[in-house]
Image (cartoon, rainbow, N blue to C red; front, side, top):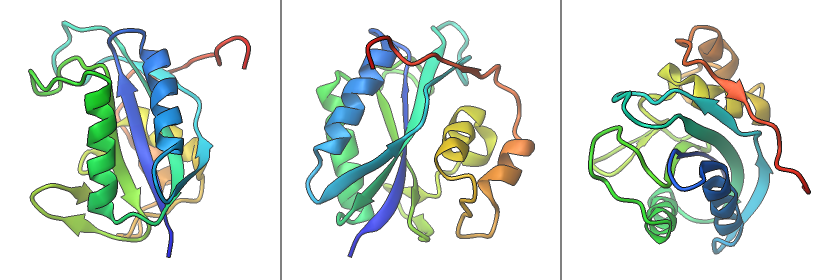
Length: 165
């Protein structure tokens, strides 16, 4: 059985758009997983400490036979392969991969909260999700479209695709 999973991507260090592109390649290569779609990339101000570069964010839709925790382990392994260091809460990072939505499941344990706990407050998460699945409804009945309409503005800017694509 496969589950549709939405993964958020973010980076603000070491050529962020390239970090996301390489992460998408790694996600497409995960075992028992197929990359179904990817959103455009967006730039936005950082959440939390402002003494860091702007972020580049996006999202992907995967079909996976992995469990949510197995997928989380894979996401964290990809982050580590990209040199992710957790030095400061909401600090700069080479790569951040968040499991945003996992099928119609609501998951709450010591390692994982799905849907992502801050999803409703992050335009840089909601807009890529809206691009991928405009009719997406969360397990609690809220739609991505209505959450986006009420989300705080983080000066989101859509980025042009890289040349040669």
